[in-house]
Every structure is written in C-alpha cells, then in structure tokens.
Length: 138
Image 1 (cartoon, rainbow, N blue to C red):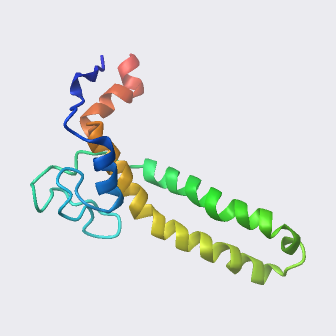
Image 2 (cartoon, one colour):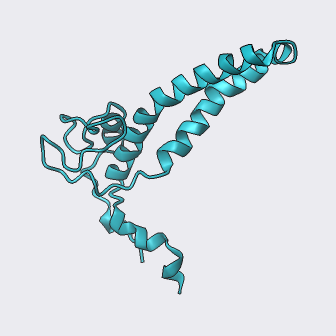
C-alpha cells in the first residue's frame, strides 16, 4: 500500500518545479535536463542524480495540448469567428496551424521539464508504476 513516508520534505515542490520549467536538473538546478529536444539526460552531469527514473511519458503531451487548446485555438475560434466562414481554406489553415504548431513546439520542453520537476518533488519513479497497473488488482 502506498504511504506518505516515501515523500521527502527536503524536496521543495516549487523549487523543483521552477528548476524543471527552466530545463535544469530538478535535484541541483545546475546541469541541463535535456541533451536533445525532449531527450532527458540519463544522469545529471553536475550532481550525478538519476534522471531516468522519472516517467514523464504521456503527461507532458497531454498538458501541452490542453495549454495550446486554451491559449491558441479557443481565442482563434472566438476572435476569428466572422472570418472562419468567409476566408478561403488555403489561407485559413496555415493561419491557424502555424501559431498552434509554434506554441506547441515551444511549450513541450518547458512542460516536460515541469512534469519532471513535479515527479522529482513528489518522489514518483518508474518503480511506482507497479502500483498503478491492472495486474495489481488480480
């Protein structure tokens, strides 16, 4: 059974979140979190912390789609409602998809870093996945 004793009060939630948002190691805040666009460093180059243990699989993509949908698509539909039915499709599609793609690609590493920071702060690792599988119920 899951218990709160695994959480370490020395891990600052907001500090870890902030370091993750900046794309830094959530443990030390000095080294880069990513070595490519979305590839997480397996081990921090500064402090040696195991960064590969935090499972940020689908969460960042979900939160990014949610963010882009609210910040780009909804205002486009509200403010551009009169133009949507009168503008040709060959103008409308690039005008809608370009800002959505740019904001999505810019936000995804930031959101993934934030998720990694939260996972670090709450001490959630890949080993905890066994607690959330359907096999555990059997």
